[in-house]
Amino acid sequence: MKRVRILLAAILAAPLLMVAQQASADTNAFRGVNWADARDNYVDGWVVPTGLAAGDSYATIKTKSDGILAAFQQQLGANTVRLPINPQSVNSDWWARYKATADSALAHGMKVIFGYWEANKDGFVDDTAAWNTMWDRVTADYGGNGGVYFEPMNEPFGYSLNAWVSLCSGWLSRHSSIPRGRVLISGTGYNDNVTGVGAASALNGTLLSLHFYGFWASDTTRAAWRANLVSRLGSYSSRTIIDEAGAPMTTGLNYTNGATQDGNVFTAYFAATTDLARERKMGVVYWPGLRDGDSYSITRQSGSGLAVNNPSGVAQLRWGWGL
Image (cartoon, rainbow, N blue to C red; front, side, top):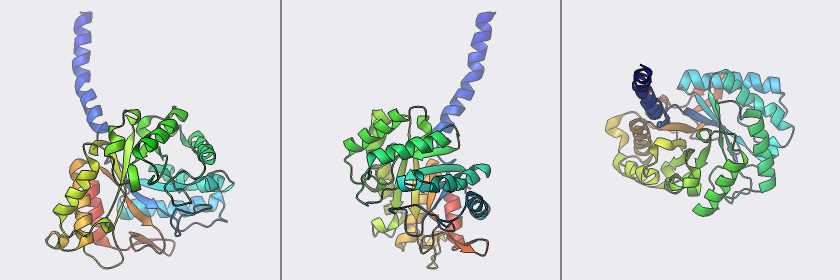
């Protein structure tokens, strides 16, 4: 009888196990936006996303963040925000206040991705000791929260594949208490190809992040852009979040008319990107959700809230999210 009970339990558990494995193979639970500094996030100083001010208190940042993040949820359908960090911001008193952005997102039931931007714009970690101190502090504060994800570096274009894998392996070892499924390893170059990091056994179990932009080529067909993106993903779509992709949202382009998506670089690019993301169940974190002075910004500040810059762009992004 005991053997029968064990066998029955195994049979009943098998479908549940299959469902769990399938769920873990998709990243489309990440429907996100980047919230960026108007100066871009490559700053030698504190990163201060649009709408915030360096003199703001924690309470003020929390109030501002509550409004902006609620607008991302209500107007876009976002459930994830990607926030920039650097040692200048975290290893200073700004961090105690800036954390209100993440705390607000978590209180709204959103996922948070912390990503490191370097200041020298050379594709290398600026100061390894300061970088380690930064990540020690960030993971100490948020490592126990399952809604927070960590991206050791944004666009590591200074490193060879082997050097980048080595740096990431060191990060994973130093922060071994963080589940690998909550770590995003950037693709090589400008985060533009995940085939190398995907194949690296030292990085097994991590998520991968890819960037993909329409100004990288001059193609005007969805088919050409799809082929471009597919080559950058290889066989690693199931682990990959496209955590930067964006197109002009203030120039009047129509992104949702299928008959005219071909014929323009950006409408063809954005359609191909969102179509493939939907098809392969990949997460997309749009660049940017909000950033002053950026024609790609899908929203803008309006009064005490946000306004959408291009409803057709929002519709196409939501399509890519599977909504």
